[in-house]
Length: 133
Length: 178
Image (cartoon, rainbow over all chains, first blue to last red; front, side, top):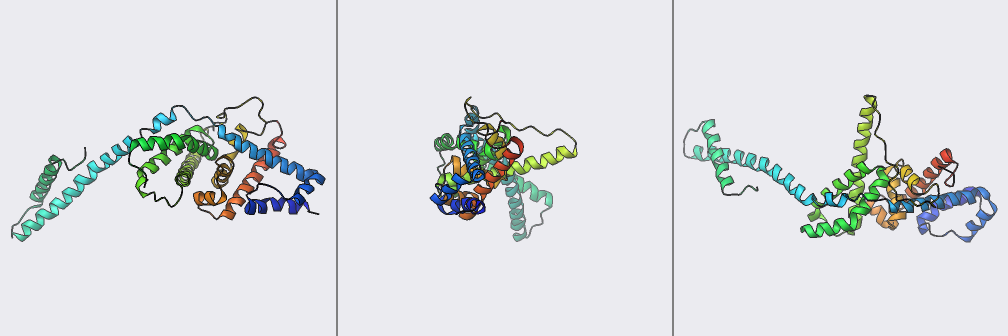
Protein backbone atom coordinates (compact mmCIF):
# COMPACT_ATOMS: atom_id res chain seq x y z
CA UNK A 1 0.00 0.00 0.00
CA UNK A 2 1.32 3.46 -0.92
CA UNK A 3 1.24 6.18 1.75
CA UNK A 4 0.07 9.74 0.99
CA UNK A 5 3.61 10.97 1.42
CA UNK A 6 4.95 8.38 -1.02
CA UNK A 7 2.16 9.17 -3.44
CA UNK A 8 2.89 12.91 -3.49
CA UNK A 9 6.65 12.39 -3.63
CA UNK A 10 6.22 9.94 -6.47
CA UNK A 11 4.51 12.64 -8.55
CA UNK A 12 7.74 14.64 -8.64
CA UNK A 13 9.89 11.56 -9.24
CA UNK A 14 7.51 10.37 -11.88
CA UNK A 15 7.76 13.69 -13.68
CA UNK A 16 11.55 13.40 -13.59
CA UNK A 17 11.69 9.95 -15.11
CA UNK A 18 8.58 9.68 -17.22
CA UNK A 19 7.58 13.21 -18.15
CA UNK A 20 4.51 13.06 -15.90
CA UNK A 21 2.41 11.29 -18.50
CA UNK A 22 0.87 8.36 -16.66
CA UNK A 23 0.86 7.17 -13.09
CA UNK A 24 1.47 3.50 -12.27
CA UNK A 25 -1.61 1.46 -11.31
CA UNK A 26 -0.44 1.26 -7.69
CA UNK A 27 -0.65 5.03 -7.36
CA UNK A 28 -3.95 5.24 -9.20
CA UNK A 29 -5.30 2.68 -6.69
CA UNK A 30 -4.19 4.98 -3.87
CA UNK A 31 -6.37 7.82 -5.14
CA UNK A 32 -9.38 5.48 -5.06
CA UNK A 33 -9.01 5.00 -1.34
CA UNK A 34 -7.60 8.38 -0.27
CA UNK A 35 -9.94 11.32 -0.83
CA UNK A 36 -7.30 13.99 -0.05
CA UNK A 37 -4.86 12.64 -2.62
CA UNK A 38 -7.65 12.29 -5.14
CA UNK A 39 -8.50 15.99 -4.64
CA UNK A 40 -4.79 16.82 -4.77
CA UNK A 41 -4.36 15.03 -8.10
CA UNK A 42 -7.55 16.58 -9.45
CA UNK A 43 -6.36 20.07 -8.43
CA UNK A 44 -3.04 19.56 -10.22
CA UNK A 45 -4.87 18.35 -13.33
CA UNK A 46 -7.08 21.47 -13.22
CA UNK A 47 -4.01 23.68 -12.92
CA UNK A 48 -2.34 21.92 -15.86
CA UNK A 49 -5.49 22.47 -17.90
CA UNK A 50 -5.53 26.14 -16.85
CA UNK A 51 -1.93 26.55 -18.00
CA UNK A 52 -2.76 24.95 -21.36
CA UNK A 53 -5.67 27.35 -21.74
CA UNK A 54 -3.25 30.26 -21.63
CA UNK A 55 -2.34 29.27 -25.20
CA UNK A 56 -5.40 31.34 -26.10
CA UNK A 57 -3.88 34.61 -24.89
CA UNK A 58 -4.84 37.20 -27.47
CA UNK A 59 -1.88 38.72 -29.30
CA UNK A 60 -2.33 42.50 -29.80
CA UNK A 61 -3.19 43.04 -33.49
CA UNK A 62 -0.68 45.86 -33.87
CA UNK A 63 2.22 43.87 -32.41
CA UNK A 64 3.46 42.28 -35.65
CA UNK A 65 3.33 45.52 -37.58
CA UNK A 66 5.40 47.22 -34.91
CA UNK A 67 7.97 44.40 -34.80
CA UNK A 68 8.47 44.26 -38.56
CA UNK A 69 10.46 47.49 -38.42
CA UNK A 70 13.13 45.96 -36.14
CA UNK A 71 15.76 45.47 -38.91
CA UNK A 72 15.33 49.10 -40.01
CA UNK A 73 15.49 50.37 -36.42
CA UNK A 74 18.61 48.29 -35.79
CA UNK A 75 20.26 49.69 -38.92
CA UNK A 76 19.42 53.23 -37.78
CA UNK A 77 20.98 52.50 -34.36
CA UNK A 78 24.14 51.13 -35.99
CA UNK A 79 24.38 54.11 -38.34
CA UNK A 80 23.95 56.55 -35.44
CA UNK A 81 26.66 54.77 -33.47
CA UNK A 82 28.99 54.61 -36.45
CA UNK A 83 28.49 58.28 -37.24
CA UNK A 84 30.12 59.03 -33.88
CA UNK A 85 32.59 56.17 -33.51
CA UNK A 86 34.09 56.08 -37.00
CA UNK A 87 34.93 59.81 -37.20
CA UNK A 88 36.31 59.67 -33.64
CA UNK A 89 38.54 56.71 -34.51
CA UNK A 90 39.66 58.36 -37.75
CA UNK A 91 40.40 61.57 -35.91
CA UNK A 92 42.65 59.82 -33.42
CA UNK A 93 44.33 57.72 -36.10
CA UNK A 94 44.82 60.78 -38.31
CA UNK A 95 46.33 62.80 -35.48
CA UNK A 96 48.75 60.00 -34.63
CA UNK A 97 49.70 59.48 -38.27
CA UNK A 98 50.29 63.19 -38.83
CA UNK A 99 52.53 63.36 -35.75
CA UNK A 100 54.44 60.30 -36.90
CA UNK A 101 54.98 61.61 -40.44
CA UNK A 102 56.02 65.03 -39.14
CA UNK A 103 58.40 63.47 -36.62
CA UNK A 104 60.03 61.29 -39.32
CA UNK A 105 60.53 64.33 -41.51
CA UNK A 106 62.13 66.20 -38.63
CA UNK A 107 59.37 68.82 -38.64
CA UNK A 108 57.86 70.47 -35.64
CA UNK A 109 54.07 70.34 -35.77
CA UNK A 110 51.81 72.05 -33.29
CA UNK A 111 48.82 70.24 -31.76
CA UNK A 112 46.50 72.59 -33.63
CA UNK A 113 48.06 71.72 -36.94
CA UNK A 114 47.93 68.01 -36.09
CA UNK A 115 44.24 68.27 -35.33
CA UNK A 116 43.60 70.26 -38.49
CA UNK A 117 45.37 67.54 -40.48
CA UNK A 118 43.29 64.88 -38.77
CA UNK A 119 40.09 66.79 -39.56
CA UNK A 120 41.15 66.98 -43.17
CA UNK A 121 41.60 63.19 -43.25
CA UNK A 122 38.17 62.63 -41.73
CA UNK A 123 36.55 65.04 -44.16
CA UNK A 124 38.31 63.33 -47.04
CA UNK A 125 37.17 59.88 -45.94
CA UNK A 126 33.62 61.10 -45.41
CA UNK A 127 33.65 62.61 -48.86
CA UNK A 128 34.89 59.32 -50.28
CA UNK A 129 31.72 57.84 -48.69
CA UNK A 130 33.52 55.39 -46.46
CA UNK A 131 31.30 56.47 -43.59
CA UNK A 132 27.86 54.89 -43.91
CA UNK A 133 24.93 57.27 -44.26
CA UNK B 1 23.75 31.66 -38.81
CA UNK B 2 20.31 33.03 -39.66
CA UNK B 3 19.54 34.84 -42.87
CA UNK B 4 20.17 38.58 -43.31
CA UNK B 5 17.11 38.93 -45.48
CA UNK B 6 14.27 40.96 -44.03
CA UNK B 7 11.75 38.65 -45.71
CA UNK B 8 13.16 35.76 -43.66
CA UNK B 9 12.94 37.86 -40.52
CA UNK B 10 9.27 38.51 -41.27
CA UNK B 11 8.70 34.76 -41.70
CA UNK B 12 10.39 34.14 -38.34
CA UNK B 13 8.20 36.86 -36.83
CA UNK B 14 5.02 35.32 -38.16
CA UNK B 15 6.04 31.90 -36.83
CA UNK B 16 7.29 32.89 -33.39
CA UNK B 17 6.09 36.38 -32.36
CA UNK B 18 2.75 35.12 -31.03
CA UNK B 19 4.37 32.28 -29.10
CA UNK B 20 7.03 34.63 -27.73
CA UNK B 21 4.36 37.12 -26.65
CA UNK B 22 2.34 34.40 -24.88
CA UNK B 23 5.43 33.07 -23.13
CA UNK B 24 6.26 36.62 -22.00
CA UNK B 25 2.67 37.14 -20.79
CA UNK B 26 2.90 34.00 -18.64
CA UNK B 27 6.14 35.17 -17.06
CA UNK B 28 5.36 38.88 -16.76
CA UNK B 29 1.57 38.98 -16.46
CA UNK B 30 0.82 42.19 -18.31
CA UNK B 31 0.67 43.37 -21.87
CA UNK B 32 3.07 46.32 -21.71
CA UNK B 33 5.90 44.31 -20.17
CA UNK B 34 5.28 41.37 -22.49
CA UNK B 35 5.45 43.63 -25.54
CA UNK B 36 8.67 45.20 -24.27
CA UNK B 37 10.19 41.77 -23.69
CA UNK B 38 9.22 40.49 -27.15
CA UNK B 39 10.61 43.62 -28.75
CA UNK B 40 13.89 43.34 -26.83
CA UNK B 41 14.13 39.63 -27.66
CA UNK B 42 13.52 40.19 -31.38
CA UNK B 43 16.05 43.00 -31.46
CA UNK B 44 18.60 40.64 -29.87
CA UNK B 45 17.68 37.89 -32.36
CA UNK B 46 18.20 40.24 -35.30
CA UNK B 47 21.42 41.63 -33.83
CA UNK B 48 22.91 38.19 -33.13
CA UNK B 49 21.47 36.33 -36.13
CA UNK B 50 24.98 35.66 -37.44
CA UNK B 51 26.11 34.01 -34.23
CA UNK B 52 23.34 31.40 -34.19
CA UNK B 53 25.24 28.19 -34.78
CA UNK B 54 22.45 25.59 -35.21
CA UNK B 55 23.80 23.69 -32.21
CA UNK B 56 20.29 23.95 -30.82
CA UNK B 57 16.93 24.09 -32.59
CA UNK B 58 16.01 27.62 -33.60
CA UNK B 59 12.92 27.55 -31.36
CA UNK B 60 15.06 26.63 -28.33
CA UNK B 61 17.33 29.58 -29.11
CA UNK B 62 14.36 31.93 -29.53
CA UNK B 63 12.68 30.81 -26.29
CA UNK B 64 15.99 31.21 -24.48
CA UNK B 65 16.35 34.80 -25.70
CA UNK B 66 12.71 35.52 -24.83
CA UNK B 67 13.23 34.12 -21.33
CA UNK B 68 16.32 36.31 -20.85
CA UNK B 69 14.44 39.37 -22.12
CA UNK B 70 11.58 38.60 -19.69
CA UNK B 71 14.00 38.39 -16.81
CA UNK B 72 15.52 41.74 -17.80
CA UNK B 73 12.07 43.37 -18.02
CA UNK B 74 11.06 41.83 -14.70
CA UNK B 75 14.22 43.15 -13.06
CA UNK B 76 13.49 46.61 -14.47
CA UNK B 77 9.90 46.40 -13.23
CA UNK B 78 11.07 45.39 -9.75
CA UNK B 79 13.49 48.30 -9.66
CA UNK B 80 10.78 50.76 -10.69
CA UNK B 81 8.36 49.22 -8.16
CA UNK B 82 10.94 49.84 -5.47
CA UNK B 83 11.28 53.39 -6.67
CA UNK B 84 7.50 53.85 -6.70
CA UNK B 85 7.36 52.45 -3.20
CA UNK B 86 10.07 54.82 -2.12
CA UNK B 87 8.16 57.70 -3.67
CA UNK B 88 4.89 56.34 -2.19
CA UNK B 89 3.22 56.11 -5.59
CA UNK B 90 0.58 53.64 -6.64
CA UNK B 91 2.18 50.65 -8.42
CA UNK B 92 1.17 50.00 -12.01
CA UNK B 93 -1.68 47.51 -12.27
CA UNK B 94 -1.17 44.22 -14.10
CA UNK B 95 -3.49 43.20 -16.89
CA UNK B 96 -5.64 40.21 -16.10
CA UNK B 97 -8.19 39.98 -18.85
CA UNK B 98 -5.96 39.23 -21.82
CA UNK B 99 -7.46 35.86 -22.54
CA UNK B 100 -10.01 35.10 -25.19
CA UNK B 101 -12.42 33.50 -22.73
CA UNK B 102 -15.42 31.31 -23.27
CA UNK B 103 -18.35 31.35 -20.85
CA UNK B 104 -18.06 27.66 -19.97
CA UNK B 105 -14.45 27.64 -18.89
CA UNK B 106 -13.68 26.52 -15.34
CA UNK B 107 -13.00 29.01 -12.56
CA UNK B 108 -9.27 28.33 -12.13
CA UNK B 109 -8.59 28.26 -15.82
CA UNK B 110 -7.18 30.75 -18.24
CA UNK B 111 -7.24 34.29 -16.90
CA UNK B 112 -6.63 33.42 -13.25
CA UNK B 113 -3.85 30.98 -13.97
CA UNK B 114 -2.30 33.58 -16.27
CA UNK B 115 -2.42 36.16 -13.47
CA UNK B 116 -1.03 33.71 -10.92
CA UNK B 117 1.74 32.42 -13.19
CA UNK B 118 3.37 35.83 -13.18
CA UNK B 119 3.64 35.60 -9.37
CA UNK B 120 5.83 32.51 -9.63
CA UNK B 121 9.60 32.75 -9.97
CA UNK B 122 10.38 33.27 -13.71
CA UNK B 123 12.09 29.88 -13.93
CA UNK B 124 8.98 28.03 -12.73
CA UNK B 125 6.60 30.09 -14.88
CA UNK B 126 8.80 29.52 -17.94
CA UNK B 127 9.15 25.78 -17.24
CA UNK B 128 5.36 25.37 -16.88
CA UNK B 129 4.75 27.39 -20.01
CA UNK B 130 7.29 25.51 -22.12
CA UNK B 131 6.12 22.11 -20.90
CA UNK B 132 2.34 22.45 -20.97
CA UNK B 133 1.83 24.96 -23.76
CA UNK B 134 4.84 24.65 -26.07
CA UNK B 135 5.02 20.92 -25.30
CA UNK B 136 8.81 20.90 -25.26
CA UNK B 137 10.67 17.87 -23.88
CA UNK B 138 12.52 18.18 -20.56
CA UNK B 139 15.81 18.08 -22.45
CA UNK B 140 14.77 21.04 -24.63
CA UNK B 141 13.44 23.01 -21.65
CA UNK B 142 16.74 22.35 -19.88
CA UNK B 143 18.55 23.87 -22.87
CA UNK B 144 16.27 26.91 -22.88
CA UNK B 145 16.58 27.54 -19.14
CA UNK B 146 20.19 26.34 -18.86
CA UNK B 147 19.46 24.00 -15.96
CA UNK B 148 19.73 20.17 -15.63
CA UNK B 149 16.69 18.18 -16.87
CA UNK B 150 16.01 16.99 -13.30
CA UNK B 151 15.68 20.61 -12.19
CA UNK B 152 13.12 21.17 -14.95
CA UNK B 153 10.88 18.51 -13.39
CA UNK B 154 11.37 20.04 -9.96
CA UNK B 155 10.55 23.53 -11.27
CA UNK B 156 7.38 22.24 -12.93
CA UNK B 157 6.30 20.35 -9.82
CA UNK B 158 7.04 23.22 -7.45
CA UNK B 159 5.31 25.68 -9.77
CA UNK B 160 2.14 23.59 -9.75
CA UNK B 161 2.34 23.15 -5.97
CA UNK B 162 2.68 26.90 -5.53
CA UNK B 163 -0.26 27.61 -7.84
CA UNK B 164 -2.36 25.09 -5.92
CA UNK B 165 -1.35 26.64 -2.61
CA UNK B 166 -2.34 30.12 -3.81
CA UNK B 167 -5.64 28.89 -5.24
CA UNK B 168 -6.44 26.93 -2.10
CA UNK B 169 -5.54 29.82 0.19
CA UNK B 170 -7.60 32.39 -1.68
CA UNK B 171 -10.35 30.47 -3.38
CA UNK B 172 -10.65 27.07 -1.74
CA UNK B 173 -8.96 25.25 -4.62
CA UNK B 174 -8.80 25.29 -8.42
CA UNK B 175 -12.52 24.48 -8.63
CA UNK B 176 -13.53 27.30 -6.31
CA UNK B 177 -15.25 30.43 -7.51
CA UNK B 178 -12.78 33.21 -8.15
